[in-house]
Image 1 (tube, one colour):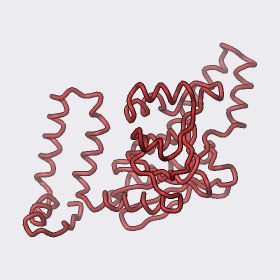
Image 2 (cartoon, one colour):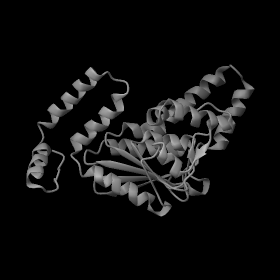
Image 3 (cartoon, helix red, strand yellow):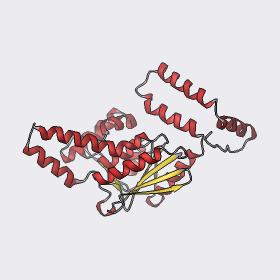
Image 4 (tube, one colour):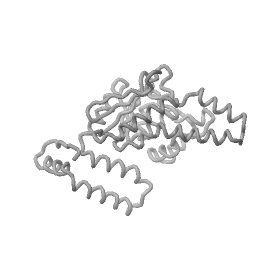
Length: 269
């Protein structure tokens, strides 16, 4: 695996690809370090308006590296309740942070689930704002079936997307879904044929990119905080963001386009 993350840029939309198809894009520390590095660079790019994340080959990501997990299990069993438990805990927190760095992007993200998205791999998709899945893709959170507690934010993101009852079903059984069932419960936004997944996700990202950047970034931040905020707090947040937009040329352009019945041309200013 010479280059675990591929990056392509199409104007103001970037596509990141997990690139270890021979191992179904199993999540490793080198892949996580490369991913976090690219996310950091993209986060600093003010011209970026949307990011698509997908996997090379037939899988999005089949989850954590089983050999790595086995090594943690061997070490833990050799030192139950001892210093190894703390070391394993710290290692997991650091590992989560590498892949969940995707949440630090100020612009919206779209996961293109071209195939299997399981365990920690699916957690990365859940950390994205939107998801497009292949009809035949298999996805789910099989942690309990492996004998390990869910990680990578699964117990935080999943209830927020599908509600506590559906989250309990999926987390406690560890069962896998296809794209059709995932779409029916709102777990993914769109379900399409496998060969159309990436193009559909990129078209969705492009549609986002055509909206005013300040409004989009503010909306993403508002949605991210909404479930933990009171109505009064959220109203204040919205008022602050609208006040900021009143200072932009993009709002002036949007109003002009509405009056002239044409598509707006936002410049991010």
